[in-house]
Amino acid sequence: MFNARINEGAGQWIEKNLVPELFDCLEKEQLQGFHAFVREEDKQTVIIEYPKHFTSAGILPEICLEIGPLAAWTPVKDCMISSYLAEKLPNVFSEPSTVIPTVEAKRTFWEKATILHKEANRRSNFIPKRYSRHYYDLYLLAQSEIKEEAFADVELLNRVVAFKEKFYLDNSAKYEEAVPATLKLLPKEEQLEHLRADYDDMQAMMFEKAPSFDEIMQGLAQLEKEIHQLGV
Image (cartoon, rainbow, N blue to C red):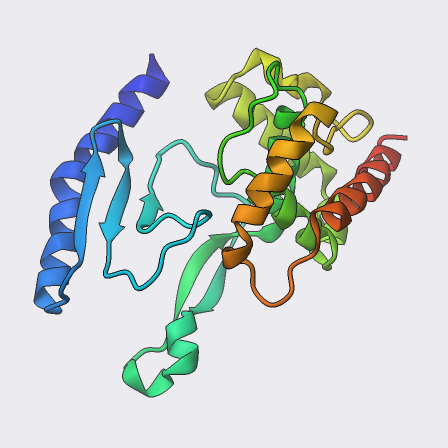
């Protein structure tokens, strides 16, 4: 199977090439308490452990670099990226910012929308841990100009769905209904309690004052109506 072969090949390259290179970089910089590795159950994710000063129920005490080969890279543009640390301590870095090829946010909008659609159609009431972030992300994207950019490119939604049907097929997701007229954003009633608790656990990840869970649900209900109008 193509998916299995390409995932296995990527995992081997990450474990044998990338991780040793990262390890060498950490040693070269003489960083203490850092460790890079992959776990046996997921060799496409590089784990970087670092010195910790606090713990949180919603934040993993490690950096996860997800480097799966089955990802779409269009539309893409070059973006200038600065780290939070460089913003606070710009004089520490010889290059406080860098240009990185980045998938355009309008694709992220439709990626998030289809994630919510899949969860709304999940046969069980289970929702993966930390999944409330997707509801939060889409809510905030909808408050920006990115919503109108996505609305102006509904064909991109079709491409996102086609990619997921090809590489991440899940019959319960009902991707055939992930079109403007029938796209679902709101979770089932039985999922709300778990999502609300998950969102509460993730508050340490939110910048400034985060919207309440109820605000997010209300905003997504309105967004769902607006998307349905695109299919009229």
